[in-house]
Image (cartoon, rainbow, N blue to C red; front, side):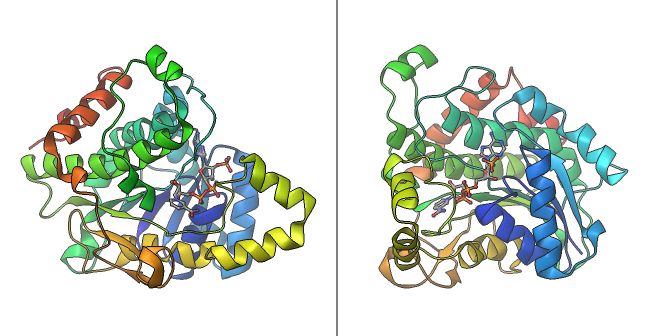
Length: 321
Ligand SMILES: NC(=O)c1ccc[n+]([C@@H]2O[C@H](COP(=O)([O-])OP(=O)(O)OC[C@H]3O[C@@H](n4cnc5c(N)ncnc54)[C@H](OP(=O)(O)O)[C@@H]3O)[C@@H](O)[C@H]2O)c1
């Protein structure tokens, strides 16, 4: 049984991921920024899977607040009764193309939540990830950090280098999403490089990426056209959604593959393998990666930005060689 932590797990792809993992008998920490939404989601998991209540634990987490992220360890310990080693850390939470907003520490929200927030969480939990103890073959026993990126990462060429004031002036909600999803991929490559330098990549931990194609979730709800359609003509909206998207149950299968497949190796990227340029279908490995992801100077720049934006927390110094 693996000990898994899934962020953004009260709805959408995160919730479906929890359901798949619990159905397979794994122990899952369901992270939700609202405790009550998390408990509602846990009820759904228990109804759907019939699993024991103790298999799913709700722990509150707001990735838009670094103090809250820093407190996650204590809440995790309180809920589980101990600081359990983590076999799979699944970085799924996200927001998409939102109007300009800031995290509690004043960072633009999309990059702040999906990249910097997840980086901060990884730093807070890395010692527990390195203690992973799952039994099984080499790759089952080695811990994994799984990031949910997106087809959208292909649309970005760079990450933001402007300071926050300038970013606000030049903000594009669409580009900020593309850059954040590229950021997810860049960070995984950078972490694998750090793990290699620290001699923990081969036997202790590695990172993989995945994307869910196009899946029906709450992600696009804030778009006025989507919410208008849902209010004005809900049955047409449902019909259209069913034609254009996969269900979250199916869309989360690449995440499940990235989490559990024995064949996983550092940097591999899972996504839907069907027709239409990886938008739909059953999961496969070796999805298309934007070559920019392998630019080490860009990976380093993002890492340095995350270190700066978290007040100097350096993941590499948290791992002893
Ligand atoms: N759906 C797709 O077609 C698609 C395509 C490509 C990539 N993705 C990626 O898949 C991931 C999951 O998205 P989804 O489609 O399942 O969207 P979703 O249904 O909107 O779920 C997003 C989850 O992230 C949580 N979240 C948002 N801001 C947070 C914060 N500050 N702190 C903690 N949790 C936060 C949400 O919590 P609340 O419920 O409290 O808001 C929710 O649980 C995202 O990373 C997204 O970029 C999705």
